Every structure is written in C-alpha cells, then in structure tokens.
Amino acid sequence: MKEKLTAIQAQAEQAIAAAESLADLEEIRLRFLGKKGELTSLLRQMGSLPPEERPVVGKLANEVRDALETALARAHQDLAREEQERKLAREKVDISLPGRKPLRGAVHPLNHVRRRIEDIFLGMGYTIEEGPEIESDYYNFVALNLPRHHPARDMQDTFYIDEETVLRTHTSPVQVRTMEKMCPAPLKMICPGKVYRKDDDATHSPMFFQIEGLVIDKGITLADLKGTLLLFAREMFGPQQQIRLRPSYFPFTEPSAEVDILCTACNGKGCRMCADTGWLEILGAGMVHPRVLEMSGYDSSQVSGFAFGMGIDRVAMLLYGITDIRYLYQNDLRTLKQFPGGLA
Ligand code: PHE
Image (cartoon, rainbow, N blue to C red; front, side, top):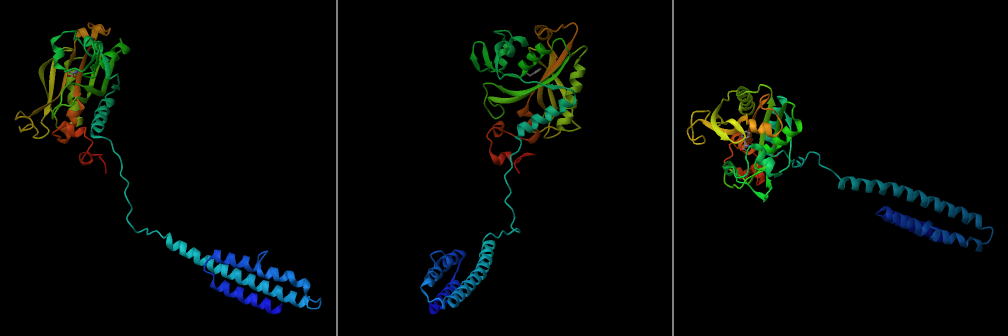
C-alpha cells in the first residue's frame, strides 16, 4: 500500500509537471483526487489493512494528498499566468496605428444653397411656407391670373395629371395658399420646394428647386422690391454685388422684371459665361397684379405687394461654376466631394 501511494504521488507529480493547460490540470486532479480518482480509490481499501498499520498509512496518504494539492495549486497559478499572458499578447492593440476615418455624410449642395437663401430671408423676418407638389389647376394657374387658354400658360411646359391637376410648375401656388390663409394680415413669406416642367437639357431639369418670395402690406413699392433683392444678392454673392432690373412679363405681376446680377465669372467685364454682357439673370420679380390680390381676398386699393422667384439650382450653378445641372442630380461622390460641406 505504501509503495502504491508513493507510486501514485510520483505519477501525479510527473503528470502535473507535464500539464500544458488549466484543462490538463483539471483532468489530472480528477484522475488522482476526484471521487473516483486513483488516490481516493486506494484510500477506500484502507479498511482491509491490519489495524496497527492504518494510522501510518493514513498519515502517509494525507501527506500525499497535501503534496498533490499544493503541487496542483502551484501549477494552476503558473499556467493561469501563462494563459493570461498569451491572451494579452493575442489581443494586443497597436495604438500607434492610424485610425480608419469613418465616411461622413454631408448636406447636398442644393440643400446647402437652399438653407443659405432661407437664412438670408429669415433674417429679414420672412416666414417659410410649404405646399403640395401635386397642385390644382386653380392654384397653379387661375389664381395667378392665368385663366384657362391664357397664352402665357405656354411659358411653363406643364405635366398634367388630369384636366384639373398638375405637377406644380412653380412654387407660386404656395403664395396663393398663404395669401388665402393669412388674409387680410400683412404677409412676408418665402416658399422653397420642388417644381416640375417638361424640360431636359444642360441647364434645365424636369424636376428642380425654386424659392419664391412674397410681401404684402400697406404702401409696398417697387423700391422695396429692389432694396430687398439687392440685399439678398450681396448676402449671397458678395458685398460688391449689383443688380439690374429689366422689364419683362409675368401674368401675376405688373410691372414685371427680370433681375440680373454682375457676372460671377468676370465680375461685369464680359466673358463667355455672360455672353459678353457682364450680367447674369437670376430671378423673376414684380409688383403683385391687383387681380391676384383680389382673387385671394385682399383689397388692392388698400394694400400692395411684391413677389420674386428664383431657381435654387441656378443659384447653385452660378455660385459653384457648375456647367451642367445634371451634376446636381447624379449623386456622384466625385462631384459631391468638391462642394463646401461636402463629404470629407
Ligand atoms: N413664378 C415665376 C416662375 O416660376 C417666377 C416669379 C415669381 C416671377 C414671382 C415673378 C414673381 O417663372
């Protein structure tokens, strides 16, 4: 029995020394010290020993168990440390490596320009109004002094949904809706949004963006319109900007004007972009036609107003020197990255 005990101790110590992992150690512990382990089984046979030998063998067995437990504990400590070190080595992060920059989204150039225009007019106390893109013939045309069969309807190549319904060709119907809503109160509003026309070339897209503005109050004159637009042009295109008004025709304004700014490419000297005129057209404007005021419930002998409208796409093209409007709608990252606030 004594020899068996020392043999078990030797075997176990050898196994412990050879253990390579905590799992190995656990296996060894079960093999020798577990309930069915070799040492435990041997101790069960103690009963068959003569009584005088039992205390001696018992003492030895305890010593063997103590020795094995100590050896296991020590090996456990060593292996645990080794495993920890291996794990740390495996998970090591090189914090000196340059990070991967996440790709950040950004505001589209058209929205960027739209917000800039909105900010300028918000600063002058205008409200921002919106309306439907699918619009009735009445709001898109009739209420703007364009009755059915009026020849000026041809100025806008309209997408008809049915006899009474169109895709709005301008944001002016929002002005009519706001006039009706606010009447008879004074009014100072802009309406940005999408508009649609049967047009498709380098400077016209079938869907594009407009911002129109409308002011109605007592004593509003053409001088108010001109001052407002000059201030806008300077905020938008630079403090040296100038504007000029050329007589024009819109059914909903009288008198009407087309408004030019100094050419953004040559600053008025004359170049290819402005066809040597030194000027670029950016918007249409005029004094609200009395009939338009009356149709929406205003007394044209008491109040007057001015209105203007511009293409956001056109402003963006002038501002950034974009030659083809389609670049604004292709969402090509190579294009978008070139704009201020574009993708980093
Ligand atoms: N609604 C006109 C257009 O889309 C622009 C405009 C608005 C002209 C207001 C004059 C006054 O062409």
